[in-house]
Amino acid sequence: MTALLEVDEVSKSFGGVQAVRELSFAVQGGEILGLIGPNGAGKSTLFNLINGVFTPELGRIRFRGIDITGKPPYRIARHGLSRTHQIVQPLTSMTVLENCTVGACFGRENLPLARAREVAREAAIVVGLEDRLRMPASQLTIAGKKRLELARALSAQPLLLLLDEVLAGLNPTEIEHMITVIRRIRERGIAIVIIEHLMQAIMTLSDRIIVLTSGEKLAEGLPSIVARDPRVIEAYLGDPALAAELHEASPA
Amino acid sequence: MLRRPFFWIIALVIAIFALAPAIGNDVQMRESLLLAAVYITLASNLNLMLGYAGYVNFGSIVFFGLGGYICVYFVSAQNWPLAAGMLAAGIAVSALAFLFGLGVLRLRGAFFALSTIGINEAVQAFVSNFEPWGGSSGIYLSAEVFQPLGGPGQALWIIYFLIVGVMGLSLFLSYAIKTSKVGLGLLAIGQNEDAAAILGVPTPFYKALAYSASAFLPAIVGGLYFFKSAFIQPSDAFDLSLSTEAMVITMLGGQGTVTGVALGAYLYEELRGFLLTSEAFSHFQLVIAGVLLLITVLFFPSGLMGWIYSRFPRTQRVLE
Image 1 (tube, each protein chain N blue to C red):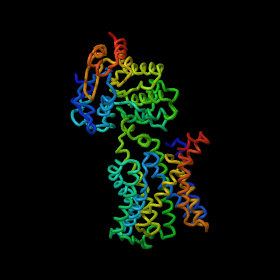
Image 2 (spheres, rainbow over the protein chains, first blue to last red):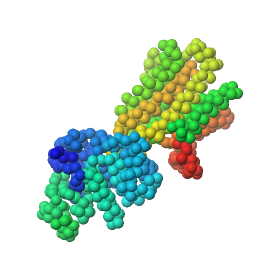
Image 3 (cartoon, one colour):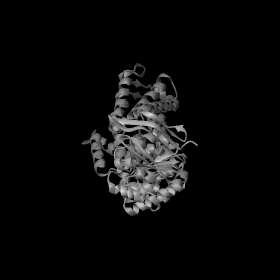
Image 4 (cartoon, chains in turn yellow, green):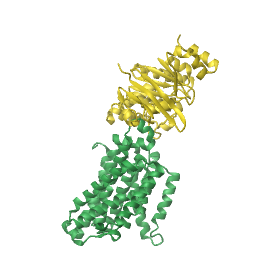
């Protein structure tokens, strides 16, 4: 069986900085893959390469067996790949429902307007925004905007969802709610790649973890194994207290 | 669509425009409403780019001027009937706009706005040196071209009704696009183009489509307008001040709304008419337009319609 997403020897640099270097990995249907690494490790760049915002200088990216390297973002979205942004990008003067309707209209199914509205409403319910459907996106709280990012991506009915720090900036209650939502999405059979700095959260959510540093893959494997890897502890966790926290979080 | 109240509001506006001057055979009212209809056409179509897709098209008058030239040329030099000339103008200008749009719409913000002025200037320079179109002295139509329409007197009425028809089509087009999937995509582009592309909106195609659509009816109205004048020359056809007026109208009325832009155009024409006839202010309209634009941008960024919506929230459900 071929993987849902295959990243094959991909490289990208900005000026003299090698942001991603000969990176390869695969995502299987239905799994949650955690992506961790220090700031500047190339995590967000990797997302931008996968969904077409940047074109890799070397290497190929295949989604559902189709080569999507260098295709524009709107084509890639049509194939069933959606994402959220680390810095939220709401369509500010449109309502929550309209934001999600855009996702549904132009997503994988390419739905007509009326049908798209139904799908959008459903997605908003999944993330818990059903009471704010008519509210302009600009009036949402930061937690609300993060949920909107997720609802909009979900409206596209994707096969793979790239989540870029959806938990950052949320309080503990909101984080708990968001984790429940992510689990709910996974139960629908949608594969997820998640970038996150909150160790406990990502260790419990992920089926597998990839550790990036300086654009290269440092380690890959089950959360419990990655967390005990001495190279990971040295390069990323550094701080022994964080390492200990991680040990506790990872299921033995 | 027939069930929506807004559809019937547009139909009513068209009926009033068509009947009001015809009933009393009021030529003066006809001329004033004709200009209002031209303004409504130009501003409504500009609104597709400015209000929906968020692209500032400063040179939108190029569609009007080029349409005028194509129609007048075919009617005078090739003896085409008016209907064929105006259709040719609409189709040719709209097709050109689509091709240009695919290229020039890669630019954003101020760069796009500047390039649209460049296009208008370049076309004007070309036409001024294009001998088949009379170069800088332009094309005169002989009185004979009005014969198939039953002579000059009747022709003016026919042209007026045609322009009102084009105005009506502009309003329906604005409304139809706004309530469609394409409209939703354009509004998303207007809010945040990068986010829209990531959500799957085919941004280059949609922008070129909007640019092309916004050229069609202004080109036809340009054809009718210059056919009526029986004279066209480059400095009238590609007059940037008319572009600016369309921009002021769109901002004043409320960019992105159908009603606001139409209302803005009508009020602007009334004001312009008043200023032209008052002795102290004749030819003062551009100064007033500038001041109006400043006041709108600074204090009422969502225009007249934004004010109406916030004052009477119920209107939002009916007036697009």
